[in-house]
Image 1 (cartoon, rainbow, N blue to C red):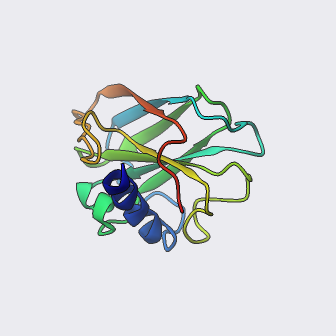
Image 2: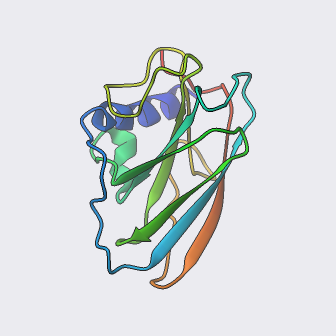
Length: 149
């Protein structure tokens, strides 16, 4: 679990320098829908959101890639959509800050934030392949077992 935490935390350092906006080509037609399944003890609502980060490289898990997009969900079982993705494959990581203060851009998540990623075998992130013109739906399940120190 420590290895998983270190890899996920690596991307968060890079996310701190990320600026919002689409770094993607508007002519692309790939769409990703991410269904969240947060089973941790925190309250998820309009003031305590889950951030979902999209990357175009698995190197985010080692702190070597910037997110290409971010969306937020206000429910434990919420769904976020990333339209017009220009590259495939992509990778997904999540952050939940129980204090509700983390905005996904102002530095690394605070201590105690829960972390997750799309992966069948953590700590290795799994690629999400999306053919042009298609929509792919995935589920990301996470809890409070991986947290920022």
